[in-house]
Structure formats: structure tokens, C-alpha cells
Image 1 (cartoon, rainbow, N blue to C red):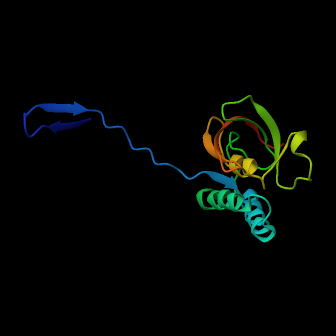
Image 2: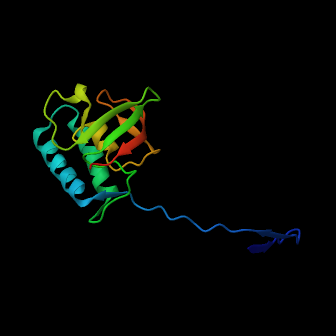
Image 3: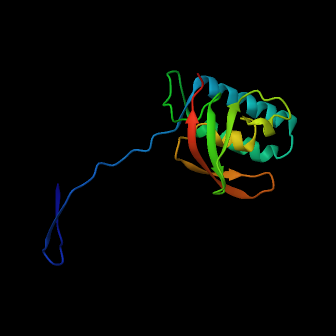
Length: 151
């Protein structure tokens, strides 16, 4: 408990001071962090559609996520996770987050990490929201509803 005295009125105030919560950096397994580096290299080399947006999202993840050699919490989206999410408040959608996706698999429930959606999802936690940059330049809200880690 802390006590303060108002210098103007002389009134004594007591209050409970809550411990400050330090924001911890999001974590990713070291293997996922290494894959993100590779995705960024390929993105900058190939310069495909929306490459500047994708490079921005990948760089942001690399800077803000701490690579760890130990296992991560089960509610963190990682490569190989089966994730359920909502975009822009829409219906729930599910997919397998993969680092190496074959072309044409987007409709079959596969989310490549080397996409704007996948790069945004990786490292998020169940219940977390983040802005999702879209290829047309718009920004939508992305919400992770559930994630099942790889077996």
C-alpha cells in the first residue's frame, strides 16, 4: 500500500500500487526464426507480388520475436500448427501453417508462412489480435481463435 498527501488540501490518500507488468517479447522456436530469415531472403530476391509488404511483415517478426531453443507455450502459432483465425470479424477459417507450401494449396487449408496472412499469424497467441496487411493495401483485423501445435 502506498500513501500520498495532497499538498494543496492536506488530504491523505491511500491506494494499492499494482506491480508493473513488463511486456515480454513474443517468442518463436529457433527453427521458425531461421525459416523467417530464409523467407525474407527469398522475398527480397524474387520480388513477387506485394513483396514490399511481405518483407515488412517478415522483418517486423524477426525484430520483435525472440528465438528460443526450448519448447514454446501451446497457444503460440508456430510452423506446423493447425490454426483457426478470423479476418475482419468474419467467419472462422482454419488452416495448416507451413514453411514450404506448394503452389495452389491455399484453397486446400494450407497457409504458407511466406504470405501476408502466414507471416502475420506466426508467433501470435490464441486470443490475440493484429493488423493484417492485405495485397490491395488495405488493413484488416486478424484474430487467432485457436491453435494446435504440431505433433
